[in-house]
Image 1 (cartoon, rainbow, N blue to C red):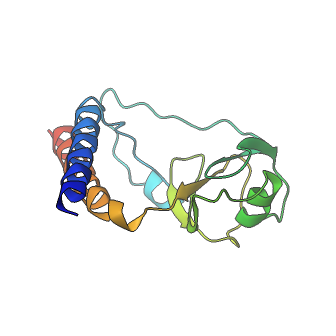
Image 2 (image 1 turned 30 degrees about the vertical axis):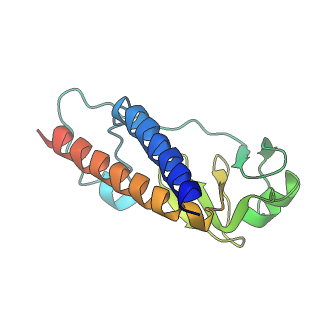
Length: 156
């Protein structure tokens, strides 16, 4: 009905407004992810800080999993193995949206077969309901604009 749609739109607008307010408070991290190729050619500027991640023997598994935890790293285990070790996916997880965050800050979309290294983080993202697609699209656009603005500010 029209009144239900209006109520839903009002709730979505409030959610977006709240998100925008929180997003305005976020300061860009200013982190540059380096790999073996780019590390050799990266120019440093006065005030730059080089952070070398600590070696660790654990893998963090969190997000939409039953029991988020730090799990001891074992050679040969894949993303799906670590997800199973913490109880598996929740009902609200999107099993096709698993993000792997490497210790150097690199983030990649992982499949269940992605090889995991010591120190990696496995993050399972939630499903997005179809009625929230417009909200998600709006939030994504806002995030993109914030990222572009942060890039411009960092380049000044």
